[in-house]
Image (tube, rainbow, N blue to C red; front, side, top):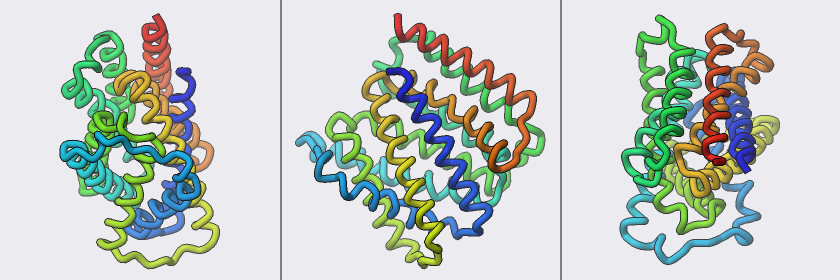
Length: 281
């Protein structure tokens, strides 16, 4: 079933590319987009909540509730910082910073969970793939950290924190239920904070619903991977996402592929294949 996280990587790349097109070419306010983006996710999930709802008693303990609040706070910060960065910078400039998220996720997972330290070779492959990915994008111009680059860096860190600590309470929920609660609370909090204006036309709204559907399936797959294979192994499979981003950016945003991106893709594929072989033994 290793192909399921790979499908998730394709979905993540698709969602990111669509959002980039929306934020860049449609001149949308990133705060409004954050609020209505989460509303779109909630609306898509709402008809199915009754069928997938599950919360175990352990989820109501003080520790679990505190962790849930940290997850939601981290998710709000991560999304706002990322949308803010995407609004200003090109996808190719932001990628080196955003691509630090897998490395940060792996490091945090290994530190926090002993179960993630059982196979050092897979950890090494994941770190190699992550560093290769980052290095393939770094240019001299990217080393100048303006507020948009710093926002992308903060977004990557908060996403990593959210994902890693989510694992500790995921068993107490159905993955669908967990993501619905997360997105509903984020929507309500950002709605109160930003008081957004609905200036979206019908086409944009439909696109947001499509993107919301993509993010729902992607997250459910991601949570499935965390519970079934662990954070480190799932993360190395999702490192394939940038390869699909390269392809989509070239097709839809007319961004040119570089030789370093091609070479890094080969290294990443080799690491992923090796990790799958090791995991299967």
